[in-house]
Length: 196
Image 1 (cartoon, rainbow, N blue to C red):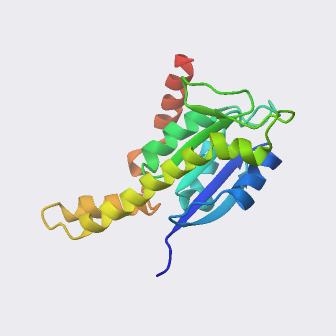
Image 2 (cartoon, rainbow, N blue to C red):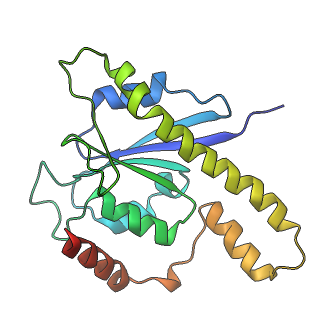
């Protein structure tokens, strides 16, 4: 029997080699095959570029850096963080699981996972096995659960067919942007930044 696949995507403007190597070479999940990809957030880009990127749309689990614009303050007037992107993505693609990571350490208020800092007693692989593996496994299990429920949902004749179709499309990365505008997303980012 063919094992199901999960698409794992790492988004960063300054790719961390140890994390990339861990995700590409070391991380394994017994329940599924991991299809790994990366998106380098560079140049004149904004959140719209990310939410329209086919690699991101097809993702099941995303790992995104908290500070996408840390290295170049000129990049985009509409700066946003990984945690803000997680909220935007949740609105548009509610079935994509997002983890936020940061080189600035853990932040429990925003559910941020710290990146590996060299010089410690453990290797980067040991570190990510300890702090990241369980988080990834949990997100993957959620995706698998949604997939299992969706199979039941497709055959439930007591639920409106249009609602089932919209839910299935969302689960499969197909969305329609008619329900959310750029102004809606900008307002969401502004509200989140005011909380900081």
